[in-house]
Image (cartoon, rainbow, N blue to C red; front, top):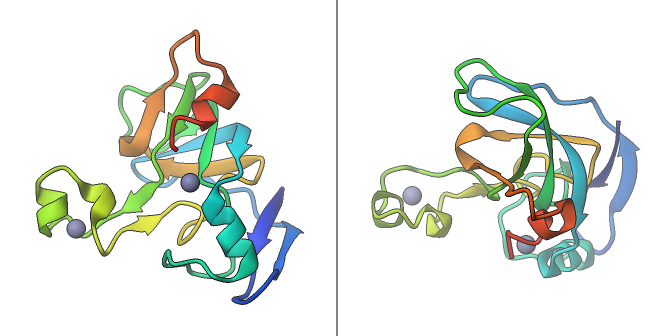
Length: 149
Ligand SMILES: [Zn+2]
Ligand SMILES: [Zn+2]
């Protein structure tokens, strides 16, 4: 599939590349992306002055919405065909004060979708089921993508 990849640090160093289509691991959900917003931080990524930890090369894009096309083992309560969005947090330490008080988005060990793990400027993306939120019927994909900011 085609995806927008940041492949090296510095100014620019982004291009549309052919990358393997992802498949969901245990506890993960595969989503066909229908809309992805361009965040201010995506511009920082392009200009090479991003303050968020990145592991390159990576598929960028983190505010998105789409349709569930596959669920991994161990996933309950999310069905193929559902319209969803997802939080940008892929993983956290689980032990710091932020994690233990529910503000895991502030964890200093936080690894984000579109920075550390492949994101949503692509046809498909894979995220942890615990970060997925169903869209109400009256929220379209563009609105769903904007729920992250
Ligand atoms: Zn953002
Ligand atoms: Zn933490």
